[in-house]
Length: 78
Image 1: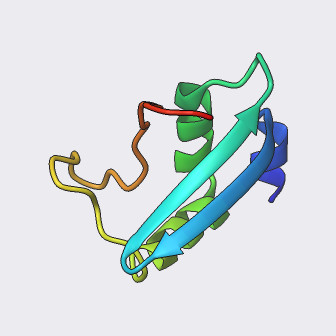
Image 2 (image 1 turned 30 degrees about the horizontal axis):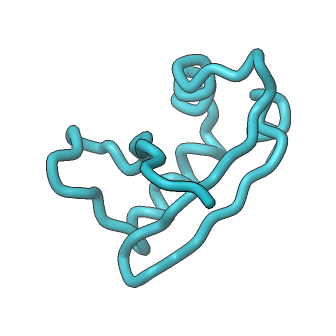
């Protein structure tokens, strides 16, 4: 949890359907996916969590090797 809070992520919601997880995050202006990824790769607890999550989630088609989370493009809002 600390790695999430210190990265600039202010709110996280994760939804599950079958073998897919969908995550929505609200972040501060200072947040950077690149910085968060770099910090996560160096954090053994985060790596332990990510390894566990592969038991519940499969990569989307066309994902890079080891890529579980991908950015989505919003196409509609009401």
